[in-house]
Structure formats: C-alpha cells, structure tokens
Amino acid sequence: MTVAVVGAGITGLSAAWELARSAVDVIVLDAERRPGGVIVTERRDGFVIEGGPDGFLAAEPDIQELAREIGVGDRLVDQSVQGTSLWTGKRLKPLAEGRAAELLGIQAPAEADLSRGFRSFASGMAEIVEALVAKLGDGGPRMRRTQGVTGLATATRGWRLSITGGSSLDVEAVVLAVPAWVTSRLLASVGVETARSLGEVVYHPSITVSLAYRADQVPAGLEGAGFVSAVEAGEAVRACTYAWRKYPGRAPNRFALLRAFLGPVDGDPGAVAHAELGRILGLRGEPLWTRAFEWPRGLPRYHRGHAERVADVRNRLARFAPLAIAGAGFDGAGVSACVKSGRAAARGILHTAPRL
Image 1: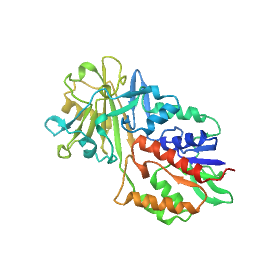
Image 2: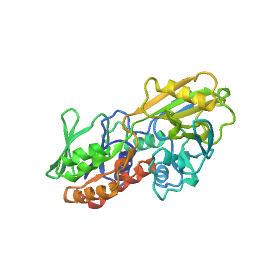
Image 3: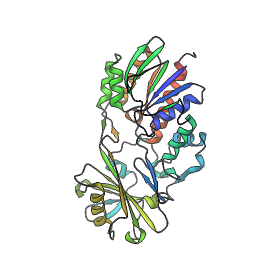
Image 4: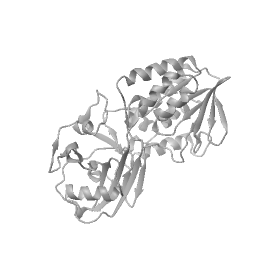
C-alpha cells in the first residue's frame, strides 16, 4: 500500500513516521523547499533563534514520546525560569498563571496543566523536524519537496493527486496535513460539500522578532520568562519572551536574546520592536541585530461548533478510499497537538486501508 502525506509540517512528518514504522510505502509531498512548516530554527554565532513556536507544554506527552522514538529524547530541555509579567502601559506587574495565553487569544486545551511550564529542544524546535526528515530519508523517494498538491480526485484503487508542474500521483490512501483552507478546497472538489465549513477556521497574522544584545544592555532585574502587553497599553509588541532566560543555551555567555510578538505594523518590525522594548524594559543602545519572521496566516482560532464540524467531515470521508485529515486547523494548534493529530490520522489509515 502506498500512502501520500500532503504537507511536511510537524503534523505531516509525524504521520509519515507512524506509517513508515509500520512498513507502509509513504510519500511526503510539500509545496515548500524547507520542511517543518511553522517550526523554524536558525542558529547564528551561538544564538538559537526561533521563528515559530519555541516550545510546548511540559505536561503534553505526544511530542516527547515521538522524540524518544526517533532518538532525540535526550535533547529535551526544561524551562529555566517561571512566571510572566503584564505590561500595563506604565509598569510591569506579575501575571496570574495561565493568563498570558488567555490575553494572547491562544486556545489551550481545557485540561492543559500549565503549572509544569514548557519544554523545548537543546538546539531549538527544529531538532525534531530534522530528526524526522533524517528518519524518512531526506533526498530519497519518500520526501518530495517543492511538489505541492493542486488537485484531488478519486481513482480506481484510491486517489489521484495532481502535483505542481502538471504531473500526477496515484496512491491507495492519503493524509491531508495542510491548513484548513487547503483541506476545505481539496475535499469540496471530490464532493464533500460540508468540508467547505473547514475554511471558516481563521488564521491570524503575526510577526516574531528576535533581537540580540550584549548582556550589559539589558537591565539585570528582569523577572520571569517575559511579559504580555495589556490591550489598553496600545503597544505594537503584544508579548515578549526573554529567550536567553527561558531556555538554556539560547545565547552565548554575556549576551541576551529577546523575542517579541507583534501584530501587523508599518515599517521595519525590528525597529518597531526595539523602540518599544527599549522603552518598556529600559534597554541601553541599539541591538546587535534583529531577525523578523512574518506569518500572514499564523495561529488558527476556532469558531463555536468547530469540533462537531470536523467530526461530521471525518464521518463523511468513510465512504471514500482511505483519507484522513490532520493538523492545527482541526485538532489543536500546539506542536504536541499536531504530533498527536498526525499520528492518529496515520493509525486511522492503517486501521481502515486494505493491505495491498
């Protein structure tokens, strides 16, 4: 049996690993040259720079179980400091546990235990992506970069995928691990009209900016792992992580690394972030460098009834050849939730697909 996994973010890579370890012939297709989706880590002169998520809840087991399976479990690191502050527009004050996510509009699972803090990987979140890609055979037939799927159709023995550039691929089963608006379009094209509702998932734009300083440019009295700005403060910087304090090894000795989260801004995001952080934190002098990552479609947020709509679509897929949907647009936006979603989709394919 050959299964196509559409999307090489953490969801798709997790699904592909689950299939591959069950001796299934799996092909990963992705429109981008770089795997990992929103997980982006750059390493520069001893700094570890995260463009997307910098960690996951320590209480969430799925990504940690996967890390141990693929040989990077020993690379997990705990959050070094706890606590978040609230910038009121005049001062920083302690913020109650769990309130930061609420103020930022992050929809954490109701059962999530925030008291255990966060975890990451020693050299950044891309470690797990790199390990998965290596396991799947980077450059081999399983990993097909810059080959996006432009169309989906039923075929005699499963599915026919139209690929960027005009080629096609026939497979027995498919895992769609792409954003909700892409999944919505592909499923509607094969007659799952209710899938159009998946396109209602809203992905909010965001910008992350990492800023490097010498340690003596940053006040010594900063507390906790960062701050969140109150809405009434009117800041472009919605939140800031003291990255070099939050996790070990994020900056060389005698240097500091900040990470700001901005909404859409006019002008250079790095300059905007430095100007506001300089005023809020009392920074001295200019940053050594800044690095901005812009996400026109960032974190998904669900409308009321989302889970029921997703369940309805999945029920309707049962009349087709094996096809599963997975990812942040359906089952939770955190990286561990994406791992869980991808592996569950793969197990569903293994359970329902005939052995050919």
